[in-house]
Image (tube, rainbow over all chains, first blue to last red; front, top):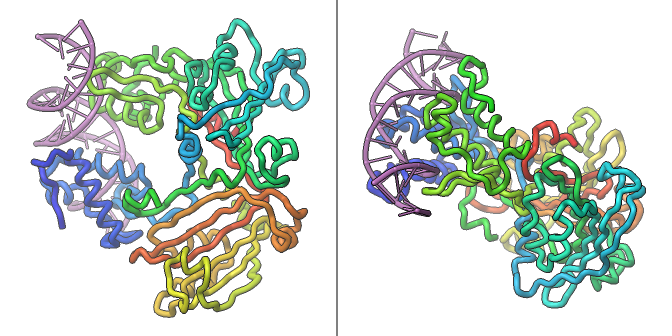
Length: 250
Length: 250
DNA sequence: CAGTGGTCTAGACCACCCT
DNA sequence: GGGTGGTCTAGACCACTGG
């Protein structure tokens, strides 16, 4: 079994993490097994207890092991429910920065009514900037976006929104320091006729609906909208359980 | 500004985390702002540097702040791309433990062919256990499951699969210590006629397709399958950015 | 009781950044 | 050079678990 090499450029705690990960990955440590105690690992690797603890904490955060006070540290079984899907995959879709363009289909002032007033918790009389955008990759439409923005000339967010021509700008652009948090949700949906036409897809195509609700630092909703992305363009993938980093590209 | 109370039952590092989170949440610390240096925080709160560092590391893992060696620690802007969606929502759907039943529609031995051989990287002659299950909640069908299992009497996984009558058992059950890792992916799809009929839904309803590929500790695929879940039953939600825990139930 | 992990300290040395 | 975060040590005391 390998030990920590204190002459390496890699920090000791990181070496310990790798060594333990490896033993789990090859099945030398199986789910439910107890790891050597911290003091044993200290003695074996010749490092201090804090270094060992740091390594173990990293494995805990990764979900690879679980610590039980008074008992020990144990290898976790694969937890199906622990799987998480990131929006990174969407980012990949849009990473071809140069080929991405945004076409603004509509930008108009509306008065709040119906669903919008409830979603954004605003009065019916409130003025809203309504926008419809089409996101194109190499001149092929890949996403459709609808958004309601609170129209308040005293808040510069509207201005910055109007200038947006890149998706990156749209979602993490210059103006986003006005946004404190955002509630996102993903639904499966079927393209409506209008959407299918805009996205040049057959009617009734499966699609993701990514809804977003942005809040400012006063906890007021400032923007509500959603992206429609045909299923063919997007798929969320993840790996759960013990694996080597190299597998992440599978 | 509040300080750490060393007489509290809450650990010091945790108090520091809360205090800093709070200052970010109320906008006292804005995106891009620099936090007080670690030594300043030590002096202010009257704790050691390791305690402060531990607190800051937690904020780093949460994505709330970023550290830059030689410069300082800064509040991160809200990162749309950092959003992650967990399978916890699916778990909620199935959490009504007593009301959940599984009906086995089919369980038969097949020979590998076509897609399956490629997905599972097995020979055409390989024998597979093919299963179709319907998951019911209070006698209403909510999910449909298809699965191919490598049929190898020397491996006990097949046996344990056949005994499965609860979903919890299926996904994290007794037999799962044979599974080292799993590749999951989510797609948007439209119910096929057969699926719609089984799920008692209108034809061409939007649905999620959750595909899973399980590997054993020898890195051999042992199970490939997918869940079909009508959109009405499932929605993935998450919050990104500064927020109080209480908001997570919104 | 002995052994485990959980918290915490008061130092140390280093790499890095800015002026 | 002076300040920042990054790594690490050698202790300490505590809470919890099991026999």
